[in-house]
Amino acid sequence: MRTHRSLSRRSAVAALTAFLAASALSGCSDASADRSITVSAPQSLQAVLATIATTFEQQHPGARVTIARSGTTPADVVATDDEAAMDRLGERVIDPRRFASNSLIIVTPLGNPGQLRGFADLARPGLRVATCAVRLPCGSAVARLEKITGVGLSDPIHVDSGEAAVSAVASGRADAALAYQTQTRRGLGVTVDVVDDPVFAKVINRYPIAVSRTSDDNATAEDFVKTVIGPIGGAALATAGFGPPSG
Image (tube, rainbow, N blue to C red; front, top):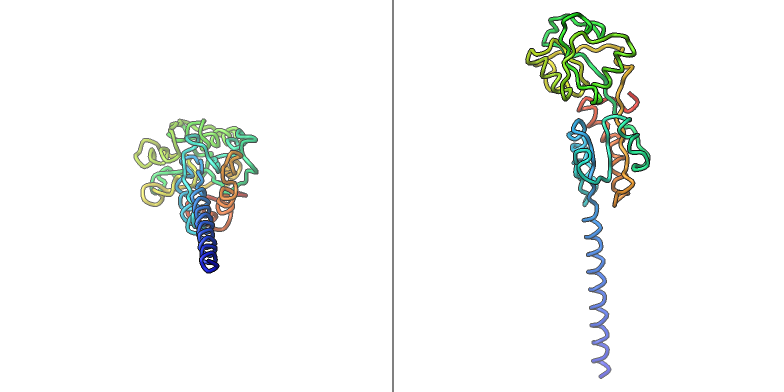
């Protein structure tokens, strides 16, 4: 009987140990499954943030990052295409930080047949200049620059994006365009050329990113923000044509 009790006790201990081990493994599995975050971003940032997210996932096993269009779903991290948009979020975000910048540039047909040298040349009578609608950051920057310099576009064509402005030049619908540097990269040297002007430094656009106050996983969200503002994010952003946060 003594031997039987000893074996029963050992069996019970073994069963309890197995149960606790299984519970621990189950807890780890649940923790990994919970490391999914959503990043809200405008279309202009989605591609580069997706590139950064791929590297982040590789370096953080179990983490999953979904890039969603601004305003379409609750988010753990929010990136905006200008600081005014982030300011409007107020207390809904935690500690916004700049992670990139962008500046305007003049887009011309290949070879710059109009011999445009700077922003002031865009006031030439009859020159058709494509630019973003004023409600967009790229269009707002143009409007601010007109006010700062006193130079007004002669014959503006307002479109829905910087890429559309570049396309208007490539197709011949516009003689020139104003767009952000990142928006010109696809056709540069193939269908269009660009002309820079020091005056564009007066209206540099800066992009902020922040953790949402309603995030269910602040730790993973903060780790992603740190990746974006760190060397990994900086390299991806530079490749995409963005400038440094300081501008």
